[in-house]
Length: 107
Image (cartoon, rainbow, N blue to C red):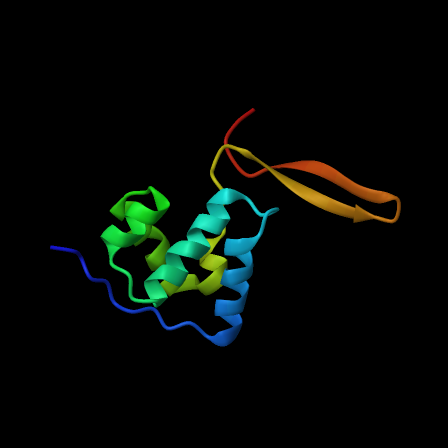
């Protein structure tokens, strides 16, 4: 039996942003897939249908549905991981520079 999920209500602004992410040729694929998971969930698709279309697993679908429910569009962004370097863009008048910022762990 297909697992039916609770419907996700999207605001028009969220739906528009997610549709742009899903169609984008320049956004990372993982972000496009997350947008597609939320859009398909909002359409009432089952976990199994989403998994088949996106070639993913039910735990992945569940994870991104929960994260969107708690944090909206910001919940779909990657979280900082301990012990790794995060790159922060520094906007300068002559271009864009990149600096390393240590977020935790040891060198």
